[in-house]
Image 1 (cartoon, rainbow, N blue to C red):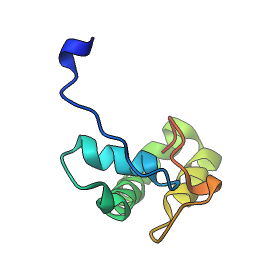
Image 2: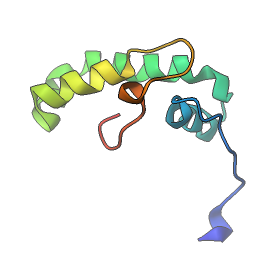
Image 3: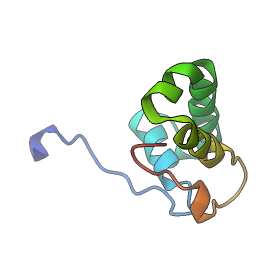
Length: 85
């Protein structure tokens, strides 16, 4: 598996690290984590009926609430949580 690893990065661990890591994997700066949260939130809102079918209304609400954070360190309830955010 290591033959496929192109490099590694260690994003800042401030509660936004999952979103920072996602930015890095897309070739962006880890400081663009608010943009990433916003893009994911736009996706949820645009395809809300599909996400309701996939995850149910309660999980959809949970996903939206987790993504709504754009300044400073993130509290635990705003951390990326797989597979929902």
